Amino acid sequence: MTRTRPFLLAALATFTAILAGCGGSSGPAKPQIAVIPKGTTHEFWKSIHAGAEKAASELGVEVIWMGPQREDDRQLQIQVVQNFISRNVDAIVLAPLDARSLARPVETAVERGIPVVVIDSDLDSDAHSSFVATNNFEGGRLCARRLAEVMNYRGNAIMLRLQEGSASTTEREEGFLAEIREVAPDIILLSDNQYAGATMEKALQVSQNLLNRFPEVDGIFTPNESSTQGMLRALQTAGRSGEVRLVGFDNNEVLLEGLRSGQIDGLTLQDPFDMGYRGVTTAVAILNGQPVNKQVDTRMMMVTPDNLDDPVARELLHPDLSTWLDE
Image (cartoon, rainbow, N blue to C red; front, side, top):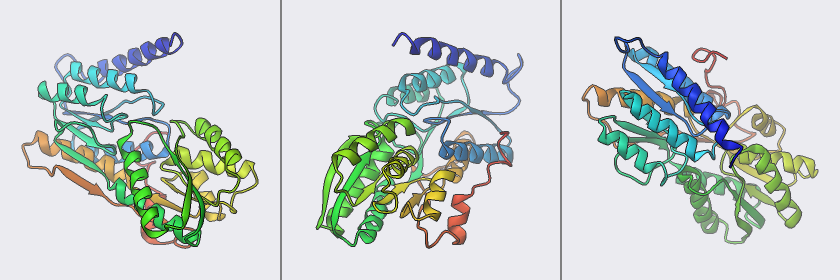
């Protein structure tokens, strides 16, 4: 704990400096929308950022993008929300790291007159105005059907969870479990209670332990980008990629190459670009007094080595980031 505190203070100091430069003493020229992701390193969050910036450009608002680097730093995300409340931004778009621990900060924002749109992962609260996300339970079911298919509906499987408190991945995991038991009762689940953690490095370590513990495994489901990449690397290191069937969630260049080479049998792809876009447009609609839907579903698709050239798959695999992000 003594090592994380200086980083936390430094990050918040940087955050305060960023906010200080967002407007002059006469106040901001444009409405300010704070967009707070779970993390900032994965391609998923970069796509959300790009979509948010596209919406901001079209609607004449300013997006302030700030979140923790790691997707397990609940305390820093809470601090970021609290600082945006103190800054009195016009609206907040939030992907909560933890369904429970972020509930009270969101309620505080709403009490202060700052509307909140939740994206990606749900919250244990009714305070937010709208929830923009993938149908994660159905996404887990898609993965179960694909894994059952490539396993010929028999054999031994593992489900690697992400982390406790993450509502989006928990829904995927529960959807997977419900469907695999329904469509493939002959598949034996060797393990469904291990957590990959928030980073690819941690996921690799946990994945290696699982492969060593269960050498008889035939198929694996992983619920997000980092857990899928960690498991893929563990299978490659063990010389079992392509032999053990792997179905996961989300996309980056490593996972796309895994699909192309047949080392990954399927990925449920979301549309994070649209999620970021619709998060900001929904927030602006609220500021303009327009009615919004309490829940907005964004699209998803199971992509396999056989449908990589499908137009929708190509759009989801290659979102337009460079136009909207300075990288």
